[in-house]
Amino acid sequence: MIDKAVEKLIKREEARQKRVINLIASENFVSDDVLRALGSVFTNKYAEGYPGARYYGGNEVVDELENIVKARALKLFALNPLRWAVNVQPLSGSPANLAVYHALVPVGEKIMGMRLDMGGHLTHGHKVSVTGKLWTQVPYGVDRKTERLDYNALLKLAKREKPKLIVTGYTAYPRTIDFKKFRKIADAVVYPELHRRGAILMVDMSHFAGLVAGRAYPSPFKYADVVTTTTHKTLRGPRAALIFSNLKLKTYDKKRSIAEAIDKAVFPGLQGGPHENAIAAVGVALREAAQPSFRKYSRQVVKNARALAEELRKLGWRVVSGGTDTHLLLVDTMSRGMSGKVASEKLERAGIIVNKNTIPYDARKPTDPSGIRLGTPAVTTRGMKEKDMRALAYRINKVLKSV
Image (cartoon, rainbow, N blue to C red):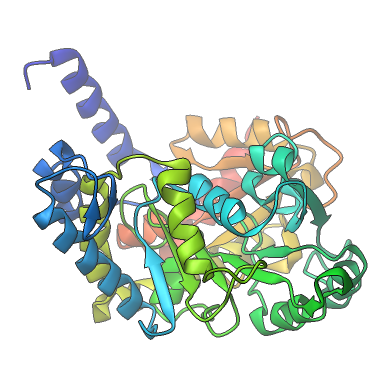
């Protein structure tokens, strides 16, 4: 590389990633093939529009690429192409979620989403996000005692507030989501002024998409109207996103399908030319996720998270909700007198990378919360098993207890 300054930083970052133990729940390590696709000549191509309807010439190969990636995405999640469509152009998860709202929910209407401080995402309607500025969030959380979703409380909230769209799928909720119950909650919403019933049910499976693909987590597709996901977490791909939409469902004005509305929201509504190099890398990752070895990997991710949570509990740390069903867990470090910020900094100095995180009903501010979030996708990619998690729990405990 001619640019030695950038080359030096690339080498330093590569060395850092190899040196540390990465427990960031939203990070992973991609394959060499994914990296090669990401750095391919598709970077050079501008491709505004969709296959067969571009605004630039020279897109015959790009059209074929996008169609292949769409087909792979539908096949990976066992979706019927006569019922489901997928948009592969969103640049990341946040604009993907924004596109769904922009397409399906009139500005100013209500979106029911989990509170950020209880595990939701900024784009689920939080006030500092544009999603909370353009739409009104109906916030919900978890039960104070169990630290799990209370579906009866959610049903009462939805029936009272009548949101146009309900979002489930979170960034810091360690338990399995009952999508069937969420479907019943969405269907129970009645809009007398529209002479219709049923809120749109959107699942943001960004964190657990790879687990769904690997059959280690329940699929939301039987119950959801729209499913969004990033591709770089448990799915082990590049930083990009996908939007799946039910072809049979119409928008509130009944003028077109929600799939058509979402396509128009992505382009030309929110984006110009898609990042075709990232789409190529997504295609590679989807093929990898379709292999039998990926199912084994996904199951191991969950086993590792459970082993880590259980060992930390044995060592006296309070694990939020008592454990985990997924790839992540939350540890209440303040239960032993240490803020999440201090804990994460101590662990990083010891070569263990986590992130500080709020816990349910946290009395502390997000910049210095009461807990930390741990995840096992990256360490599982590196080959760690349950015995390694137990050893890691002891190391974490030793670091946090040190003066």
